[in-house]
Each structure stands twice: as C-alpha cells, then as structure tokens.
Image (cartoon, rainbow, N blue to C red):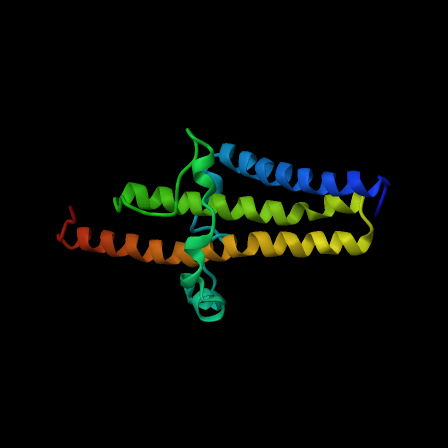
Amino acid sequence: MRIFFLPTGWTIVLCFVLWIVINFSAAYVCLYLPDKVFNPRSFFYRSHPFEKDGQIYEDIFRVKSWKQLLPDGGGLWKKRGYKKRHLQDFSEENLERFLIEACRGEMTHWLSILSFWIFGLFLPTSSTWAMLIYALVANLPCIIAQRYNRPRILRLLERRRSRQYFGNTIS
C-alpha cells in the first residue's frame, strides 16, 4: 500500500539506492548470524525429492553453463567472507565450510527477494510487482546455483568419509 508520494526523479533514485542497501544489508545480516543457523542438512537447505539432488537445476536451467558467470559476493567482506567460486581445498573441514557458506549465500538472496514489498511504500502497485520480478531475476539464479552445488558437495564429502571409514585415507 503506497504511503509516500515522491517526485519521479527521486523515486527512481530511491529504487536504485534501496536495492543496493537491501542487498548489502541482507548479506551483512547473514554474515554475522552464527554458522549453526546455516545447517545444510536442515529442512530448508537440504535437497528435496523433487530437486533430485540438484539435477533438476541442470535439466531445466542448464546451471552448469552459466553459474560461473554469477558474482561471488564472498570476496566483498574481506575478513568474514568466503569465496565460493573456485573450490581449491577439498579437505573435510573446507567442504563443511563451503556447505555452510552456500547456505548463508542462499539465505542472503532469499532475504533480498522477500524485501521487495518495501517498494510498495512509495511505488504504485504495478511498479511494486516489477520490483518483485527484478528481485526474482536478480536472485533466483544465485539460489539455483547454491541448491545445485550443495548436494554435489555433500556427495563428495560422504564419499571422502566412506573411504576414510574403510581404511582408504585420502591425503
């Protein structure tokens, strides 16, 4: 429900500024939430049967062909960030860290999408719907990539653990 009526120029500027603030705020909040909030095995983050361990994202969206084009926001936060683009350390500890950070990244993008309603305070209804479409277009590819990668990392982690369990330690 529109409450504020601003001149068109200020409204456009506010939209751009607000999206930047929303995205950085969502990232900042998620960055400072404790790791236990981002359990990759919890209901929200785990792969559900319809996702077929992430394969649905390759089958429908061809995620492997474009996921490398997505920005990696982990590098923006020098001390607390975690770069997920190129996994170079395949230790159990780092794979677990990757899973947590993938959940953190997914939550960041969900929060950005869910914040679209704020635009309804100063935009007409039709423009608010346009903001939702923008939020989905800008954030769903990142969520899809996280939901595609996590089951693959979980399988890798389980394979490593089963090899170690059966005496074939991996260096």
